[in-house]
Structures are given as C-alpha cells and as structure tokens.
Length: 96
Image (cartoon, rainbow, N blue to C red; front, side, top):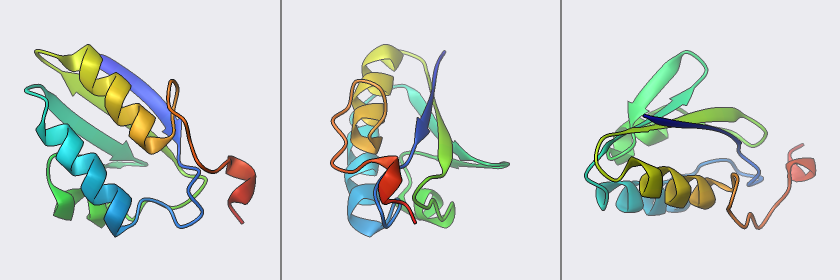
C-alpha cells in the first residue's frame, strides 16, 4: 500500500475539470485508489464521489493506492494534484 499527503494549491480547489482529469487517470490503474479529505473518503475512480468531498484550496488530502501498479498510480495521481513529484501551476500562498 502506498500513501501520500498532498496540499491542494489550485485557488479553486479540486473542481470539475481537474477532478475529471484525476478520475480519468485513476481509472487507468488496476489498483484500488482512495482519496481522503478529513474524515471522508472517496473511490478515486468515481467522479461523483471525488466531487462530493468538496476539496478546497489549502486543504490537505491523503491519497492511498493498493494493489498492482500502486507505485505508478500514487506518483502520477499525486502529480496531478500538485503533490510531491508534480509540477503544480499554483502555490499554497494563492489560497485565500
């Protein structure tokens, strides 16, 4: 099992377009992927579940991948969220 903590830096949070890109990438991986925000969690392969988390700028999330290909999944998905190994287009100071 691979786990990574990521702080969302997009000023509008994880809204429709980036959430859709995130879910599409998650669906490419055979492992189970969970996105956790606070005390709530979502199947990262479900756009409705991911959007229901209401993730905002500056919020810390936990990404968990378990199963075949978990390392590749955690790297690619955390990069999309702006985490370690990613190239975020915003920084946490933009949250306001």
